[in-house]
Each structure stands twice: as C-alpha cells, then as structure tokens.
Image 1 (cartoon, rainbow, N blue to C red):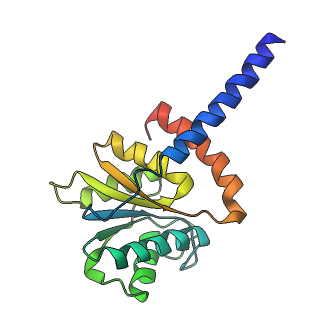
Image 2 (image 1 turned 60 degrees about the horizontal axis):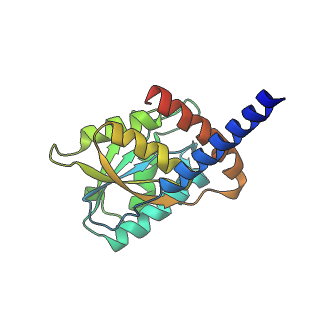
Length: 185
C-alpha cells in the first residue's frame, strides 16, 4: 500500500512539475530587443497552415508589425502528408499578410523541434547569440530548453493553443519534456 501511495504521489508531483516548467517557459516575454525570431512549424493541411500553425503566424504578424526590424526564420520541413514544407506555408501566409520577403529566412528540412532549432541556428549570423522563439504556449519550455542546450539564449512569444487539441498537446508535451531532459533532444 505504501509503495502504491508513493508511486501516485511521485506521478502527481512529476505532472505538476512539468506543468510548472511549461508555464515558466513562456517567460521572459519577447520585447523586440532581439534581431531574430524563429517561428516553429506545425502541421500543414495540403498547402494550408493548420489552426495551430495559424495561431503561431498570427502572433508573428502582430510582432512583425510592432517590431519592424525583426527578421524571422520560418522553420519546418515537409511531412509525408503535407503538399509543401511548413516553412514555405509560413512564408506564403506572412507575405500574403504584408510581411516583406527580405525579413524572412526559410528552413525547410527539419522534422522535429530539435532539428527546428539546430537548422535555424545555422541560418543565424555567427555573432547572434539570442533569439525569440515563437511557438504554441505548451511548446515553449521544451523548445527553449533545446535552444539553451545549443548555447542559444531565448525569450518567448507564446501562441494560444486551439481548444480542440489542447488536452492532447499538454499530455504529449509533458512526455516530450521528460524525453528532452533524459536524451537532450
């Protein structure tokens, strides 16, 4: 009986700790002081950004308007069920909504959050040591943890999560955080 209670308490404590990490990952909030922002990709339906990706892009659009000197790395490859790379879908969406092409850098090879950060970092000038990460609120902690492991300082711009997928993403992200802590990716 004592082992069962201990296991339940350990599980509950871990769940709460991971939730705190996810909340803490949204701070500090981006203030336009960093020259580059990385927008992390999400599913594309055919050539159309999913709702999750649109929410990220809407945050980026507001940020681009408020901070006209910030450049954006659009990071995301093409999944087997996507007609175009996520980075390309983001480029189309942002330019159609008025963001100048010269502010956008494309990264279209990544297939994971780890690769998003790794490949995006390669597009940065050598002297850039800090970037803004734009992704869903639940995803920021892990993305920033990965960036930190690559000696890249970050601030955050959280995008809301669609209600229809919120529970699924929050559970999945907790498991992914555990994996990142253990494996580093």
